Image (cartoon, rainbow, N blue to C red; front, side, top):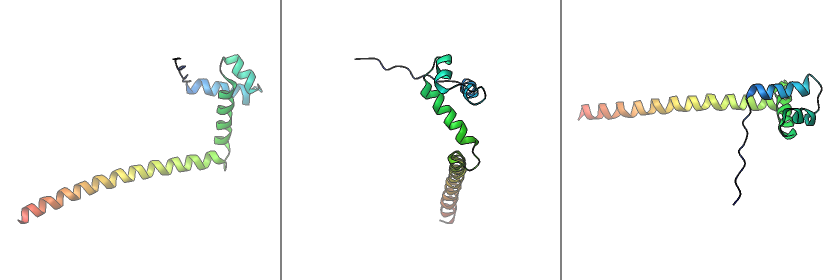
Amino acid sequence: MSEKSARSNYTKEFKQDAIKLVVEHGYSCQEAGRRLGIACANVSRWVRQHREEQEPDGPGKLRRELEEENRRLKKENQRLRMEREILKKAAAFFAKESS
């Protein structure tokens, strides 16, 4: 049975440097990948994501808005669950007191 290759985790700074090579210095994704010793597909993906994030009305903006909305709703959901638990305990307490 063959071993799975370990997936490389690159730091944010490393990714930003790779993006700079392509965006600011004019390297191709293949050349930047070769110079950094990584697959050009990684560099291409990072550059594409970077450009989507930079577009004011692009798909990156929509994704960020959805992620922000999701975080807000999760936080609100957690707060509401906590409030519901408090009300359950209070109702049980007062039901016990009135008996």
